Length: 73
Image (cartoon, rainbow, N blue to C red; front, side):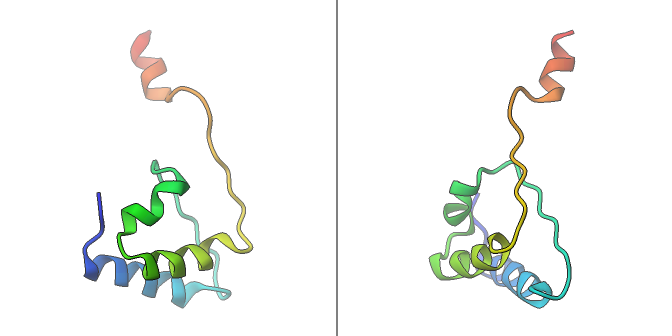
């Protein structure tokens, strides 16, 4: 999935407005390495990632999906 121009600019605007002013929590099933490709525009992706990653706490989940584990039962 690649964001459309309007969507990626809106994402950047939201992140930029909150940067250094408010906490922002982002959850994603897309690995961080694939965010640049998903955002689509390297300039916007770099700006979004710069604001999100610097000073952030990252928690990367490992292991099997709970949905898959429950479905196996």
